[in-house]
Each structure stands twice: as structure tokens, then as C-alpha cells.
Image (cartoon, rainbow, N blue to C red; front, side, top):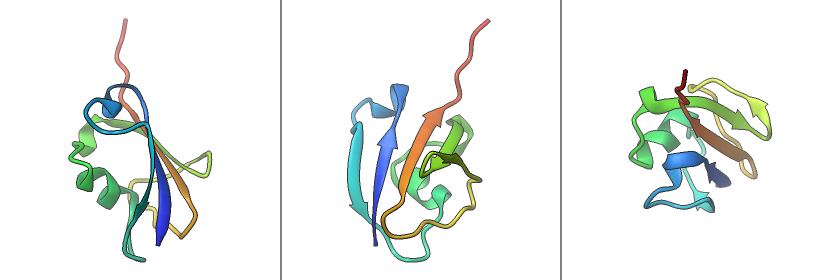
Length: 74
């Protein structure tokens, strides 16, 4: 299946901003994150089709997955 993956902030470094990619039908959000070489504990927010989602959420063909890092500050 094809999904669109959008990366934000420093996740774009040496990767991409937005890209359409192919994944198996049983792919979860965590599978995509790990496949991109991103540590799951660095992820702050994930969204499928502009709605917050859990890391174990399953993806469907045509979905848009947005991955945001944890943002720190004070």
C-alpha cells in the first residue's frame, strides 16, 4: 500500500519533508518510525489524516502520516 509520510523539525535532517512510500498492508505507525531510523522515544506527536493517533495504529492505503519530535523548552 502507498502512504504519504510527512516529517517535521529535525526529523527532516538527512531524510525528507514529505514522501509517498510503499509499505505492507499490516504496517503500524511504529513500523514506519523505526524504518526511518527514528527512535520511538524521540517522537512527540503522530497524526494520521490530521488526527492524533497511537503508535500502534494501523495504516491504510492513502493515509497521510505526520511525525513530530518531542519539543523541549523552558
